[in-house]
Structures are given as structure tokens and as C-alpha cells.
Image 1: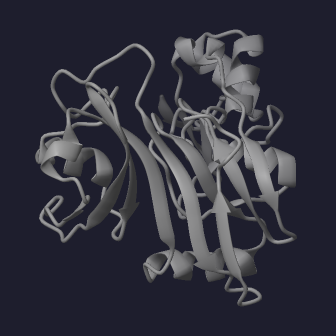
Image 2: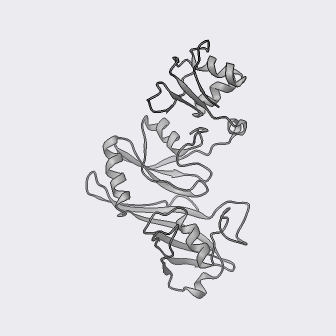
Image 3: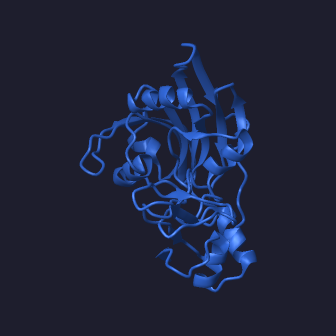
Length: 269
């Protein structure tokens, strides 16, 4: 629902929502807390996510309300910080957790969980909802700018543990440097084989570019799709979820120029 406040409308947010959605205040408070309500106070102002039920409105206010009842009963997996610094930290994102919120809310995102734990958080990079593993978050504007520049320059070494379908070792015993374009853009992935099983293989892949679903699309095109990938590949589906984990990050800390080399060694792949 997208509505502007008119003459005669309630001038308190939750009362306005109750009138126009016909939902109970209990449900509306859940939607507000989950981040499904957006407010533009003035015609020329930027819309912002708002959670306070008693937010005052004016005749210039514009409200956007996004609601799906299934989001009220979602089981939200919990992220955890695995390496802590004063201005930034590394977090483990479990599978099924979004990197950031959508119009319908941010309660199912790791960014919201980090914000709640740290008071303030900035997303530096993303990880697919289906995947799990390491993510870096900044806790200050200064750190956010510094780390974002690091990622934009492509000088972060990002390694992933991946299980792929098929005997990839037979065709590529020494690994491979994959250079298939993704969405018309240059994309490069290198990998080595950690273990060849009967029907699948565990590999360590490094991405040198950051294209959408790069690893998943590269290995599908190579003929060895990622096990459990819900979108790419044939014959690789399962009930356990995608077998892709952001395993290691290696970079020079832009804040103190020291090397950081962190592996997610406490999570069983």
C-alpha cells in the first residue's frame, strides 16, 4: 500500500495504518518492527524505514506499507561475530539469511542483526542468501569508506569452499582459471580440488571479480554445477541447501596497513 496523508486521516502512524490496512495494531507493530513500513515526511524528502508506531504525520507525509503474513512467522537464523575489531568485524552468515533487507523488511537480514548488536553497521559486500560464510561489516563511517574502497578496487582475496557435481578432477586435475563472461562482463574464477568423491568434488575457489552468482554460474557453464543450487544446474538439487561457503578473506587492513588472513575453520563444511 502506498498512500499520502489526506484531510481527516489520523496523524499518528499506527492509527493511519490501522485505518487503511484494516489490520490489528498487534500485527502492525510486528510489521513496523520488522521494517516493512517506509515514510517520506515531505514530498521532496527521501523515504526512510520507520519502526516507531507513534511517529507523527502531516498532510505532506507519504507512507509505503509492505506486508506478507508469512514474514511474521519466519524462523530467522542467527549470525555471529567471529573476529572483532574496534571499527569493524567479521561475521558468520548462516544459510537462509539475507545480506540486507528488502522493502518488506530487514528482520531476516544479517545487516539488521549486526546493527542490533553493534548499534551501527555498514554493509561492505554481499553474500547470496542461500550461501553461508564470512562477511565483513564496518561499524563507523570511516571504516565503511575505507573497506568499501578496498572491495571496489578488487584487492581482497576471497576464497570459497564449494561442492560440485561430477568428476571434475578427471578433466581438470590441476584446477582451472575460468574466464567465462557473466552478463557480458569479464569474470574470473580460479580453483583447486581439495577432494574428489564418487559423484561430487570439494573445491577451493577464488573469485577475482564480483559478478552476480559468479561461482554458481561459472561452474554450471563448466558442466559441474554447485550441489544444492536452487537456480543453476541440472541433476544437482538436494534437500539440504546449496554447498557453497565463503571460507576465507585475505586483505591489507586499510586502517592500520596490517595483513588480515582469516579462515572460517570452526564451521564444518
